Image (cartoon, rainbow, N blue to C red):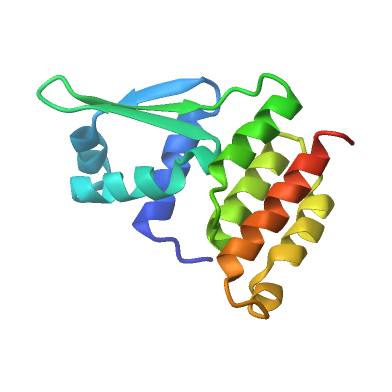
Length: 152
C-alpha cells in the first residue's frame, strides 16, 4: 500500500466533495479539526493543489464568518480554455506548473493522455537542462504548443 501524506488525503477529500458540484465553501478550522491537523496544513493544500493552472479558483473571506470558496474553472469552449492556460504561463514556467497545465487539459478532455506525454517530453527537465534559462525556454515552447492546439 502506498504511503500517503496528510496533504494528499486532504486534497483527495476536497476533490471528492467538488466532484459533483462547481464550488464548495469550507471553514479552514473545521477541515483542520476533521483531519486533526493544523489550519496552516489546509492553507498549504489549497495554495499548492487548487491553483488556476490546475483548474481551480480560490476566494477567501477572513473573520468570524470567514470561509474559503474553491471553484472549478468553467470551460466555455476549448479555445477559450486554452487561452486561459496560456495566460497563466508568464515569461517563465516551472516544470511543475507546466505539468499541472497539461494534466488539467487531459482532465478536461482537451488533450489525450498520449498527447500530453509527448508535449511533456518536449519541456521535460532532461531537455531543458541543455538551456541557460530552462524555465524561459519551457514557457516559450509550452505557449507555442498550447496555441497550436486551438487550430487542430
